[in-house]
Length: 466
Ligand SMILES: Cc1cc2nc3c(=O)[nH]c(=O)nc-3n(C[C@H](O)[C@H](O)[C@H](O)COP(=O)(O)OP(=O)(O)OC[C@H]3O[C@@H](n4cnc5c(N)ncnc54)[C@H](O)[C@@H]3O)c2cc1C
Image (tube, rainbow, N blue to C red; front, side, top):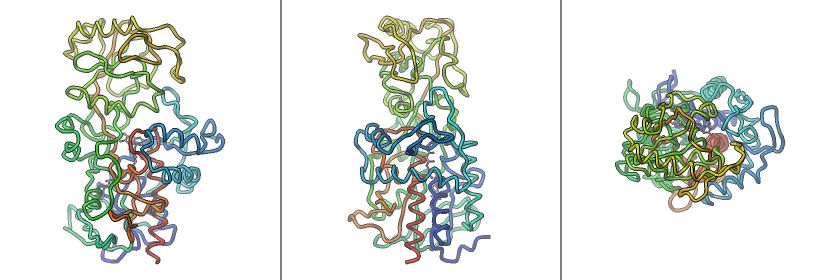
């Protein structure tokens, strides 16, 4: 039984990767640490439960990574994918620290496995958790508990008392036992973004947000983020920016996880409810492009789209949880989704006519492209002409939002007046917008959580000591 009346050195709000890295780091720095996880124990770990890998810089191949991924290359990728919308100093600091994180998480009990193949193309850049995110979390929780971190589940924080940039206490609400005031010398906020709060999403997306599916935990409703911003912390990031992918329209509203994602876009074409293409399906290699498709579908009428392909590519991508819908002709396929058959036939015919011969290779930017078509398909364009034909219906799958709390290199929150907070730190999704102004490359979410979690814990412990 955790004694909640005592004052802790460090209070960590959240129970995912960022929270656990912070908690372990703070405890290893000598602090007494309390973790308040809003979810019940079975659902502990937020979006982290769904993860598979983390992107870190490294100078040479390892037993699980096929080659070097230098700091410079990581930075170049980040600069490109965010279009420069990143805090350069902070991002470069994160990338430098990421080199050390691969070993640090192993010291905390996490194990790696070689990358999966297929369309992921991540074997050189990303390390995969043996057993996935849940196994990774279980290892972190075990270590945390072994070294004396105290954890309370079903522990939703409903208020924060903050005076002049200084955290004083948090109000904990539990299903049984009512509200409790939790005191700590320093706070680490690691409670995720606001992606599961449809009403909040509607402020930026309008009614369209009703058609969004949330890929991860229903517990990331942004309550802590909102409290911090309301109580003087400087915000960072565009509230409409988020990581969103195209997921199967048949997926559950929340927590469908990785198996609802579709990686087949580059093998076919994507049409909207008017059976018309709307974006270049072959713009760049899939790990650099998969995260734009949620936004693209969100911008389409009724927030729905259809990935269309033929029998020749059926086994070219990862098997999906929901099987594709099959038909012997394009017109029949259209009928299964109430698409206009004549228009879909024309869209496919126009596409086929525009395809130029080339040598297909999905691992590089190959020379299979269309000519004279708007929008073009600039790589991996091959005719859709071998029946049976297939389609997946897709909707925007929101992964996490980028609006966050501004932090400095110590992961210390920065107040609206530009001064660093006296004792408040942040890590993970809740501050991701510092690094990700827009865009995404696979595995950066976990880098942000691990690197800043570790820093936040260490700094919060030191802060508490002083
Ligand atoms: C399907 C899916 C797959 C993904 N795959 C990858 C991947 O392979 N690699 C990668 O880098 N990223 C991936 N991501 C993104 C990744 O999950 C996040 O970037 C990362 O897990 C964020 O960690 P976090 O600790 O900040 O947040 P989370 O892990 O989401 O943890 C937030 C925690 O805060 C708790 N919480 C929220 N509000 C409160 C409150 N009021 N009181 C108390 N607790 C509260 C929640 O219960 C939760 O435990 C994926 C996301 C999804 C949804």
